[in-house]
Image 1: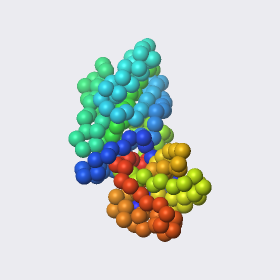
Image 2: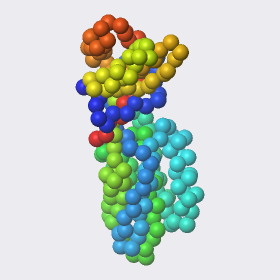
Image 3: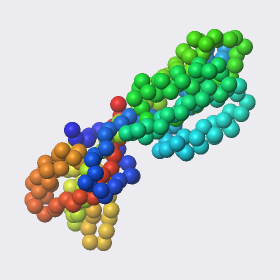
Image 4: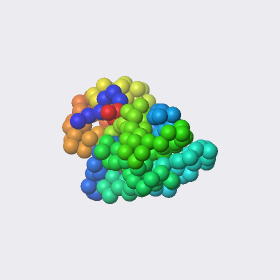
Length: 231
């Protein structure tokens, strides 16, 4: 399956092509927040995409510092793809009524590399254990809907060298064919175009490139990267 509209290449890549290709995974599109009010209590869910546990903890610390006057800043995060690390905290709410339902929403939606902090300003009306579970879960679920998700798909990264006069046309042709332009490097003697190609389609891309350039350009392996697709 090729790219097309909505695809974005990320900066990370690796040159080790012999390793098994990583699997696609879902994550939040970016940082953001969403608020809902339940029986006069304010629940503000803050979401962020994070690369590791340290980044998740740093985001949590930042939110707790910013919302120091709130009664609770409950947390949950999932990081990693193959063996994800998961953590949650009720931050003073009754055990199992905040962090666990928040984490369960992340699990159920299948997202990783994502941290959620739900800040609660108590409105004077107790919600009970069941009400808290529903409220914290809804805060995360609605925030995910509001901010949106994307899928990160691994692709082979191929480097194509072309002269300056043909670079613009080839770049447009690559995009029109549904492949991902992952990078452009303007050099003194030409332009290097990095193209993201799903690994099962690498042979097909070589054939397409030869036809598109009349055999004047070839592609060299340059590792792997990820492309991001809105879902």
